[in-house]
Every structure is written in structure tokens, then in C-alpha cells.
Amino acid sequence: MSELINNRQQRIEIMKTLIRQLHSGVAEERVKAQLETLLDEADYSDVFLMEVQLMHEGIPAESIQQLCDAHTRVLKKHLDLQETPNTVPGHPVHTFVQENRELTKTTAQIRLLMKQVDALPDDQDATELMRAIQGHLNNLMDVDKHYRRKEYLLFPYFEKNNLPGPSTVMWGKDDEVRELLRQTIAGLQQVESITAAEAKAYNLLAVTPSIEAVDDMVYKEEKILFPTALNLLTEQDWYEIYLQSDEYGYCLYAPQFEWVPEGGVHKEIRKTVAANGRVQMPTGSFTLEELIGVFSTMPFDLTFVDKEDTVRYFSPGKDRIFDRSRAILGRKVQYCHPPKSVHIVNQILRDFKAGKQNRARFWINFRGKLVYICYYAVRNERGEYLGTLEVTQDLTEVRALQGERRLLTYDDTVQE
Image (cartoon, rainbow, N blue to C red; front, side, top):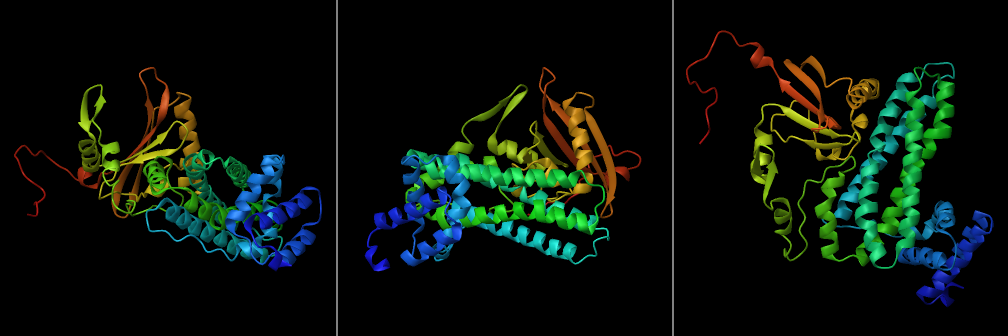
């Protein structure tokens, strides 16, 4: 019968009929069998247009969202034929795909840990393994940055092209993933110790649905969303997305390549956007180049977390004590720390926000150095909390100073 399906709209009409059957309660396996009998292939754009037409015909977005996983499973055999989009490094889709690779690596690590839990006797302590799982789940919360770039930078172009429906559905699925992860992590944060039997049950009821939801969204993006977007958006559209991506941050992956659309006609746009005028402050001003240079020269490391607990900046010094990558930008600071120390981070932030404290200091021995770490509450002129500044400095050399130095003496020789 597939030879009779000789054009795109006919294929879409058949898929719509079958999805309506899902909507009306027909068993998923029966619908899947019918589809595989009728169609030899289904193009990713057919799936996208199918959702648009169903919504135009009156099926609510919420219903499409509820059926989204089911109709993706029904069409999986055909979607599997679609290749993951191949773009050059630095292109927004390349970055999205690389982030997806890191997400699926993380879900695979969680599955491996769950197998180790399953191998334990029910009465054995599984706290250490579950803490490791919690750490990986914290990393998965980085997906929020991936989703926000998709939702706030990519989806508007679908709306401009009168295709808002599928992006609305996917946004709803993104929110489901976020909530699953949040609830799963919150549950583990309440646990001081856990037996293997309890851990197995928790993994089955909470952890598994969370990581499956992450993996399912990766599949939908790469088989449906990104191929459709590459056909829909212009190079100028993608470049505008590229220019704004840093503001939202990256997910478990930091792009290392600058991307310029073919032809190079937009090469100077980023420089103009970034360096337009001086940065004026109450006690003076900088050009952007000067400001970057100053922050790169400071003999200590700075990291700024805004009032929403989101990492917004770190200084780019070449001799940083603790490594930073752009992947942490836009990430909640709680997920940048191991689970065992998150309660300390939260206590500092609560006290700063409540106005109870303005500074928290620590000093540790780290790789033969005396490292001084100080957190400062950043406030405006009215005393309102703006965020937290972390300052980290190597005090080893300073601690060793004795006597005085009053004559000009250079410690370092400049290489010419």
C-alpha cells in the first residue's frame, strides 16, 4: 500500500489519522503496527508539519504534549533513518549536538551506577553510590541552559515563520524534564543514608524517568527539531543566535570555536556589538578591551554569581587556582559544587540575601599552596542584594614575606 502514498501531504494525513487514534485512546502498539504497514519512511519535516496541522485543526497543545512521547515512539523506526545534523564547529546546532553528547554520556554514567546499586544485597548501605548518582544528576541540571537557548533564541524563529505549535509542545516537554530532575535531586538531598533496597526503589521511581526524559529530548531535537530548523533559518538568523548564546551559557560543553557564516560578511558584527563605546562607572570608565585586560591581570580569581544564584562571570587569568570553563556560565552555583558541600553554599547565600552577613572566608592547603577563598555579598547603594563575588588568591608568597622592600626590584624577567 505504501506505493500509493506518493506525496507529502498524503503521508501527513495518514500520520494525523493515526495520531488522532492515539488521542482517542487506541492502543499504541496497534497504531504503531498500522503505521509501519502503511509507510516506508517518514521525513522529520512531515512529523513537524503534522503537529502544526493537528493543532490548527483543534487538538490542544497540551494534548499534543501528552502524546508527544507516544507518537515519537510510534514513528521511531522511520525517524531512526534521519542522520544527526552535521554542522561546522561553533555553529549553534553543532554546539547543541555536542552538549547532547555530554548529556547522554552523563545519563549512561548514571545507568552504570544504578546497575552497581542493583547488584548490592538489599540491606547493604548504598549511600556512596547514590551520592555519585546525585552528582551526575546535578550535572544534568545544566540542561536548563541548553533548553533556554533553544526556547529563547531558536523558537522565536519558528514563531516568525508561523510555526509556533511544535515549539510550544517541546517547551512543555522541556519543563517536564526540568521538574523531574529537580524533584529527583531534591529527594536525594533529604537523605542522609540509604539502603540498597531503598535506592533500587528510588532509582526505578525517580531516577530512571528523569534520565529517560533527558535522552528522549535529545532524540527529538536531533531527529526532528534541528533538521527542521536548519531548513527554516537563514545564515543571518543562525549568526544572531550565535551572538546571543554566551548570555545563556552552555551545557556541560564549552564551544572553543568562533563561527562566522560563509562569506565572512558578518565577521565584524561581534566586535561592534561588544566594543561599542566605553563602559561608564561612577569613578571612571573603560573601553571593553581595557576592562577585559584589567580583569585578566588581577592577581586573584573572581567569580560572580547573580541574585538568582546563576554564575554570570569568571575572570580569565592564565594562572587560575581552580579551573573554570565557559560551560559554568548560566549554571546554578549549587550545581557547581559536590553534593556534600552544597549545604554550605546555600547557607552563605541565605545569610547574604537576608542581610545577616557580608563576608565568608576560608583558607586551605591546595597543591602545596595556601589558598585564600573569600565570598562577598554584592549590594547596590540601597543595600539590596545583587549577588555574590568569590575571590580566590594564592597567599603562599605573601605569607613568606619578611622585613621590607623599599627599593625597585623586579621579580620577573620579561621575555622579548
